[in-house]
Image 1: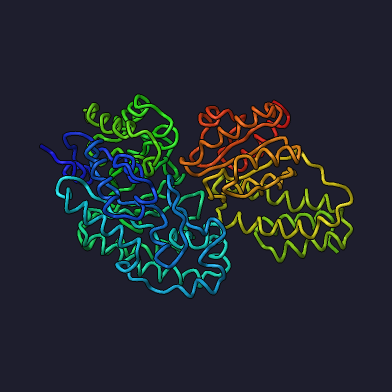
Image 2 (image 1 turned 45 degrees about the horizontal axis):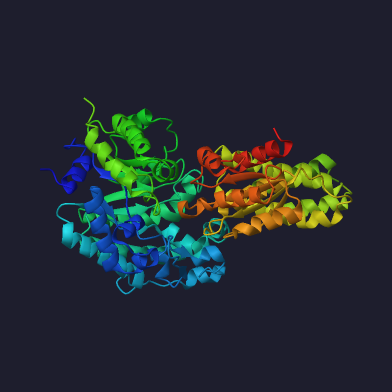
Length: 350
Length: 215
């Protein structure tokens, strides 16, 4: 019998498995399986692990993503974070309390040991528990928010986007320091036993930064992390849930085994074109739409959309049916199960 | 001495380039040359910003550029507004904000800039806005439209509560509702009872105009 992990490895190796692997990226939503509040799930590794183990058992998906929230990284430098009881943690930079208040603050950031940072340690421990408990059977993907994304959580994206034009050297100094910490954070997750690292590179998108700005302010830094991941024989997966994403840029910098995405990438207008253009270059992790289909839709809607994607993208392997972003934390769990059922019910096209 | 056309096109170009210092110089030049401040705003600052918005939508400009242009536009508005002889022609009023439970306001801010560039009176409530505040401010300002945005699926359903509260208070359909934000969609807008949905800032301007005209 094929395990979940083998199924994902088959997809990454461009082989058809017994069926298409399903990854609804049930992260924060898992708290509702174990019955705890979001704020506790976000900060207690053992509770988060129990939640994710139980969610996998209940739903039957093929891989975990240890994305807790996008504030894990920035909190290591002391960025204040708010933990709502029933919603994702929020960086207080977005509420007018950024850690970086002046241009000089960019240059004050110093290296942080990820194993000593409270929230990064939480994720490392979460990785360790999942790897120990079910890591031989279920795919386990660690998660790292890229250096630019991490910095934006200490400044806001708007401020960072302006500052990189006005004060490029100060911004780059901060990015270098952040990247050094993220580099070690990545290694710590690999040592904890993950099979892949998902690098969230959200700003490689036409609606955020140009390719040139992206290259200069994230690609050149974050590629060092990707190189190290590959050196350690662990899969690099890029995640970008933005609109019109730059697959070419991500492949150029990170040489990812797979790209996880929400919407069609820049220059692509159909699923068929996506398969033709990128389907042999990287494993496609996508692209079940979260707000409308997974959150507002019914299991029947989910299955209909999943079938369309499996028919168009799965032939020959190189495809994992995933949610385009984290499964909606308050969304109906039956829709996550419907994704798994769709993979069972829809074989590879001959 | 530069002609009026040269001054206005210089002002618009500085906005497009996101060059605040040059834009301010041209704005001062408008005053010095006795160019009507309202005309300078419309045919200089706002005209430049509309081109920036179009280029952003077309993928020719990106977030850093649009933000720098906005900075330049607001700097020129500060110079020109005190010289307005009569109140600028306003095509309507919108009360806008990010719904309670969400603090992601970058998209809302771009929509605000584009609406202001189009002569709309924008009352910005900011982020994490309590539901009742949308209604109170809409009544207070006699707004034509309430605009709400959200980036989070955990918060976006609160838009429905605002629409229901507006209905209960007899404000619908007189005051229209426009929504946006990455996880929202035309289907979602319909499901919460909104009158319009805009996928980006340029579309928000068009939908606003349509709602105000009652088309």
